[in-house]
Structure formats: C-alpha cells, structure tokens
Image 1: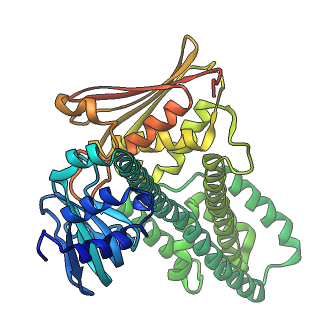
Image 2: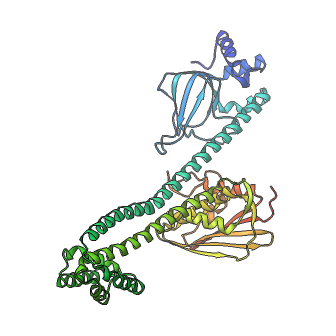
Image 3: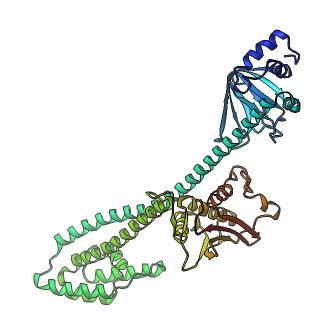
Amino acid sequence: MSSVMDQARIEALVADLRKILPFADQPRDDLEWFVSQCEERRTAVGETAVTEGAPADVMFVILEGELRARRESGPAGGPVYTARVGDVTGVLPFSRMKAFTVTVRAVLPMRTLAFPASKFPELFQRMPELSQRLVGLLTDRVRNVTREEQQREKLAALGKLSAGLAHELNNPSAAARRSAAALHDCLERLRSANRNSTLRAENCGLLAQREDEIRASLKPADDKDEFARADRQDAIQSWLEAHGVNDAWKLAPLIADANLTDEHLENFASAAGPALGPELIRFATLLEMERIASELDNSTARISDLIKAIKEYSFMDQAPLQEVDIKSSLETTLTIMHHKLKRGIAVKRDYDPDLPRVMAYGSELNQVWTNLIDNAVDAMGNSGRLLVRAARENEYVLVEIVDNGPGIPPEVQSRIFEPFFTTKGVGEGTGLGLDVVHRIVQKMRGLVTVKSVPGDTRFQVRIPIQAAM
C-alpha cells in the first residue's frame, strides 16, 4: 500500500496498535506518526514474509496471524521460532543484526505494520518511552535465544554422552549374556558326562587329588599365536584318539582353552582309567565354567563401575553445593568419556597427593571437565596425548586440561569464551561449550584461562577452596 495513508485508515490502524501492549498507553499524535511511517503488509498462509540473508531494515508489529521462523541454511532439525498477534519482531532498536538470519513464513493469515529501521532516530526523539520498551524486548529476545541455544547445547551434549555410555554398557552386558549362554552349554555337557561316566568309586579320591594338583599348576593360555594354538589343538586331538576317547575333535578345543599340558593329561588319564573320556569332558567343562564365572564377574563389575560413575557424575542424591574431591571428579568424568578417549587418546594424570576439597556445585563442575576434555579430543582428531593435572595454587585448586593438538589461532583466542563463537565447521557445534565453562566457573568465583601454541593447548581452571557463593 502507499506510504501515505488516508486519515480514516490511520485512525483504524491506531485503534489496532493500541491493542499491542508496548503501544497501548502512547499519545494519539505519536501513534498517528508511527502508523504514518509504516507499511501495512498482508501475508497469506505459507507465503514468505522475510527471506534469510535479506537486509535487516524493518521492525514488524503483528496485528493479526502467526509466523514461524527458522534457519534454512543450517541443519534440518534446527530451532523454530514463533511470533503471534501482539508481538513486535524483526529489527529492534540497537540491534546489531545487519541481515535476517531466518526465513519467516505465515502459518495463519498475517497482517503486520512494517516500520523502517532508518526511522529509529526519529522514533527515539518522538517516543522515548516506547523506545525503552522496545530495547527491553530486544534484551528479552537475546536472553531467550541464548537460553534456548544453551538448552539445545546441553541436550546435544547429553545425547553424545548417552550414546557413548550406551556403547560402554553394551560391551560388558553383551559379554555377560554370552557367558550366560555358554554356561547353559556347559551344564548340558556336565549332565551328559555324568550319565556316561564309568568311574569306579575307589578311583574318585585319586582323581579328585589329581584335579586339584592340575588346577594348582595351570597357567593362563597364550591366545596371541593362533597358529601355535591350532597346532596344540591338533596334538591334543591325536592324543585323545590314541587313548580311545570318542568325539576327540569336540573335546580338543576345550582342553586347549584350559591350557592342559601333556603331563596334565597323562596324570589325569592314569587316575581316570576307562572313564577317561567322560571324566575329561567333565573336568575341562568345570575349568571352562570357572573362566566364564570370572568373565561374568568382570563384566558385571564394569557395569557397576559405570553406573557408579554416572551417579557420581550427576551427584545424584546429593546437595547442589557440597565439598567436592577434584581428583574424584576428574576421574569420574574420564570414566564417563572412556568411549571417546579409547579411540586413540593417551591420557596422563598428574594429581597432587594432598589436594584439598573445594566447595562447589559438583554436577556443574563435571560439566566443565566434560566440555574441556571433549574439545581437546576433537582438536586432536581422536589421536593424541591428553594431560589432566590438578594442583594446589595458593587459595585455589588449579586444574589443567592439556592437549597436543594444532592449537587455537592467536587471532581468535580472545573470543573463544564468547557465546556462540566456534571454530568448528557448520553443524558441528553451537559455540556454547566454552561459554558454559566460563559461566559455571565464574559462578563459583573461579577463573578459566587458556594458553595455546601448536602442540600445547592448556586450559587452566582455578576453583577457590573456600566458596564465596
């Protein structure tokens, strides 16, 4: 429509504008001036009101309808922003936005007033109270966007952590399940061996004695040389066949896994007599069950350790502010992140033996270590050396996370703690990891700094021993 409105149309738009909270109590003459500077726009459902990348030179007052805005150049699952009737959006006074970063489409038929940003200086002079309110809206918008981005960053980090933990838990749980299945097979072999055994009662004591002697002298099998193992298995099969044992090809692998020597076999055979085959199956199966029990113990212990680490990492069932053991906090985080470190990162620890505890928010402190270690691993490309150091420094505990990656370029080192600043590629990060670190440490009245040259990037976190929170 024309930028010059007739008086009747101006009066109608002034009436509409008074329904918008920031404008409701403004003088009539000022509202008439404001409306006269605007362009009334109508946007049908599905139509584009703003295109990403277009010059940001207009403030919109939504009189009717609803819009959705999102970045179309980012990932498909990017955030969606909504504005409805009564909202003021677009470029607000003192905004530094030069170009629109989102594409805006109408989801309900929209009618808006488009006020040119070039008129902001005159707006400040004519309507100073409205200008203050619009600046307040800008502050709220920045705060809300930052909060939402931080929440998405936390959820993304939690997703990565959960995926890694799921993988770490899957390995021992799968091993435990395999062991349980193997135990079923062992029990079936034992039942069969007992049914087929012809061992005499008077030989039981001697055979039991020989079994105890063999167990005491057994050594773990060396599984590194598969060719040697195959040769040993063939030799055992030949020995069994020479002693008239049925299904020697089935029994030979069991005996090879148990690492029984020729001397063991001869001693056992002299005590078992005609019952050699079934009794050897029984003994080899019992030895296998002992190994399986040990594997089950290791697997379930690993699961328990991970669950304990998760509980310690989140400080479950504990007060938010508490005495924190920095060494334990770092070790818990390294356990939680084992899935990422084991790919090729050599971790070195350097902890002072008498580190004092600090008063801190335990779960938030763990988030600091997680973000710093995660960034270090990414910088090294999953292959390198990571140093985790903790020492007392006057009235602080100093924690250093050091990697031997390519380093942070000098020209950006002063900006790395800024919200949304990132050196990663598109879609690889929001730039909030170090901002979160900075805010948490600052909340604890601590200090975080960085020193970086190629081959030595050193993040230093100083936490006061006595909290001042």
